[in-house]
Structures are given as structure tokens and as C-alpha cells.
Length: 520
Ligand SMILES: Cc1cc2nc3c(=O)[nH]c(=O)nc-3n(C[C@H](O)[C@H](O)[C@H](O)COP(=O)(O)OP(=O)(O)OC[C@H]3O[C@@H](n4cnc5c(N)ncnc54)[C@H](O)[C@@H]3O)c2cc1C
Ligand code: FES
Image 1 (cartoon, rainbow, N blue to C red):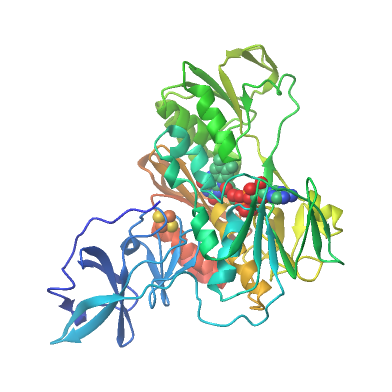
Image 2: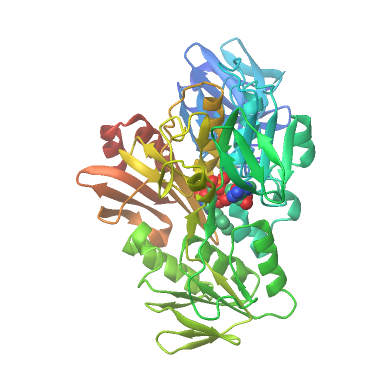
């Protein structure tokens, strides 16, 4: 899914701009060849690339420039200013790259350059395993196979996925897609022809049931084996089903897959009116918002006193509650389902909530079964080093399933975020090819509630001191999480540049810059 930014600013083809208007590291928005375009000074050179992010169409002019990259304000995709290549997820496609010329003290765009397909694509792989198999066709797995090809690997690549679908835009399943506002064609990240064109063997609807790391083989459910030179485990996580009596009622839904989202949609169209959401998690609340958009009555049941307080603090928790209530969501907090009877969720407090459908949003567990069976080290998730390699040489793990050493946090983390999973897939693939690139991106996620987007960088913890700057009700605030004096994470509403700057500073380990940033 992508959009085209409105054309504004100077006509960079016809009129150009004075060279003196270009300040090092600051993007200038204009247009050329009928498209929005950015100019950025880098020393004596001027770079020019497309201004509209190929993820969801964010305006790159509103992002930040970091060295030779521009970063998108919405979900932090990174593009190379020299080539237009998408060098870090979530964008997968390049933006346009333009030729620039300078005359009479003005800078002009004079034409288009060949776009780079993806990532860096500039070198031959340092090592080339005989073949690569990736298990799990989600965010991390999908990015891993693309990256192998983008990095020049020419051997056999196989992507095995339990899901019937090609890798798809999972975050959308609780947002616009569930709300009926995103068409089917936005959901797959790529079509089957893309994989065929890249000679990526798709084994969809197939499950790997065991791995023999000594023989370097995998067994598939229903028979069949695959051998591998290098293996990437990207098996993700599966939603938890709480042990509530009646939870196996067919009107009770989990939400992880496209099939789950379609089942909820089928369940709430055609006369259904009442939905109970169990869990005030990000996904639970996004489901509530999407189903209110469809005009359903929505009750949310959760044990905490404030939604999202544990992750975002009390003030933002109160704001999120008020936001959802203003859209008609009814909360039953400090409560939990005691049982699900015929058509009613019976609460521990004794209340009864009639339903047509129930959606569970109570968290996920990493899919470590395969790795456990193969004898890999497990600590919550599959233990990997900073190159994302597991305890078995030649076997890598990435995404929701991997427990990795996070540089900014100074400890091992397992992270359940989309952009993180995609970036780990990209870096794991590079390391399969011998790049020896340490994974250094701080965790980042976003969540969307009606027209409010929350961005979160770093990783806060339960015991952190929480400081609020700004006003959540004005949709302009930052929440700072500190462990002692050290800033561990920053959540923002309406402060995208701050979120990007903090991400960059966390990545560099620049604590003083973070202090300056959060001081305003
Ligand atoms: C509804 C929803 C909304 C979300 N919204 C956001 C959001 O707004 N922002 C955000 O940052 N994150 C969001 N997330 C989280 C994000 O989607 C995950 O962090 C991300 O998908 C993890 O990627 P992954 O590749 O590790 O795992 P997945 O995307 O789960 O992919 C793993 C794949 O492996 C397959 N698999 C597992 N075991 C096997 C096996 N043995 N054999 C074959 N295949 C196997 C699974 O079927 C699955 O397709 C959301 C998640 C959901 C469910
Ligand atoms: S719109 Fe740019 S990263 Fe999502």
C-alpha cells in the first residue's frame, strides 16, 4: 500500500531552487516530473529522491535525515538518499531517484535514475551456503528471503509457511482491514509472481515438524524433507487462549492470521451487533476501534484499572480510555471473564455481557517448539547472538521468536513488533551471507486508534520512572521511561520527529543527545 504526496513547494525541474537554500542534512520538498521530490545537501553534493514513502505514503519531508538516509515519520522506514533504495523496513520498495544539476547558483532536477530494487545490493555475498531455507512466511521470513536475493545470493531459496497466504501486512488485520476500509489487494506484501521472478520456492500451507541440525534437514508435516545449507527460523508467535470455561465456543475468535481476521469479519457482518473484546492490549483496543467503525457495539473486559497503563503510563492510559469511550466503546476494567455461556460473557464481578462474537486479545507465546525439539538454546524465545545466529552454527532466528542481545537496553530482549521482525529478517539474511552485521536497531512499534497514532522506541520496563511531557488530550505528548537516570524508551503522540531522533540516538548509544531531545 502506498500513496502519492500532494505536489507542493517549488517546481524543481522548471524553476529549481537557490543552492544557498539547501542546508546540510535538511530536506527541501518540491516536485519534478509530476512527482513529489526531496532535495538534500550532502557536502558539495545534492541528492534528490522521491518524497512519498513506499510503505503507506508518509511524507519523507517530515522525517529526518541521518547521514545518507532519510527516515519516514510514520513507521520509521529508511531510504538511501544516493539511490532511493529502501534500506530498512517497513518500506520494501525504493523511491524514485533523480539526476541533479547546478547552474547559475540554482539546483535543478533534470531526470530520473534507474531505481535500486531494494536494500544495498552493492556487493557479492561474502559466503554462499549451498541453499537457504526460511521457516515462517511472516514479517521476518518474508524480508529474509527478499534480502537474500537483494544481496546477490543466487543459490536455492525456499520459504516454508504454515499459512496458506504469501507474507501479508499483519498489522492491518486489526486496523483498516478489520474496519472494512482496506481492500484485499493491500494485504499481501508481494504477489506470487514476485517470488517466482526471484526464484524463491514458496512452500505455503506446509508446516515444518522437526529439524535435524547435524544432517541439516527439515521434516514437513505429512511427509517430505528439505535439506539446507543455512536455516532461518522466523516462526513468530501464536496468540494465547486463556483457560476460560466456554472459550472454545465457535463465536470466540483469536486474531493472528489473515484467516482469523476474515473469520471475525464474516462473524460480524450479516446481522451481528454485539462484540466483547477480552483484553485491553494494543491489538484488543485496535479491534475495538475497527469494530466501532463498523458500527458494532463493543465491550472491552480487562483486569487492569487503565488500558495500556503498564506500557504507556497512567496519563496516556486515561487518554486512550477516554478516546475509545468517545467512540462508544464500553470498558469493564478491574474485571475478567469467569466463563463464556451461551451468548453471554459472565464476568468475575457477576456482570453479564451478551455477545454475537468475542475476540480475545490477551497476548502471544513465541513459537519455539521446533527449536526446542532441535536442541537449540531457549530463554523465553530462541537464543541468538548479536548476529542473530542460534546455538547451532548456520541456524539463524529472527522476529517475535528470537531472544537477542539488545544494545540500547544492555540486556536480552524478545520483541513483538512488526518493523523489528522485518529488520531482523533483513539482517539475519545478510549474516547468512557472511555480512557479520550486528543487529543494532532499537525496538520500534506503532499502534493506531482511530486517528491517533502512538509511536514507541526503545524498551521500557515495569520498574521505570515515567515522565510525561506535553498533553495527551491535545494529541501532542511524549512519555519518557527511565531506569535510574538512563532513558530506556520514549512513547510519543504527535511528535514523530522526536521519536525518530530518539531512535537514532538510542542506536548510537548517545545518552547525552537523548537528554537534550527529551528536554525539548
Ligand atoms: C492483528 C495484529 C496487529 C498487529 N499490529 C502491530 C502494529 O501495529 N505494530 C507493530 O509493531 N506490530 C504489530 N503486530 C505485531 C507484528 O505483526 C509481529 O510482531 C510480527 O508479525 C512478527 O513477525 P514474525 O515474522 O516474527 O512472525 P509472524 O509474522 O507471526 O510470522 C511467523 C510465521 O511463521 C509460521 N510458522 C510458525 N511455525 C511454523 C512451522 N513450524 N512451519 C511453517 N511455518 C510456521 C506462522 O504460520 C507465521 O505465518 C500486530 C500483530 C497482530 C497479530
Ligand atoms: S508510511 Fe513510511 S514507514 Fe510507513
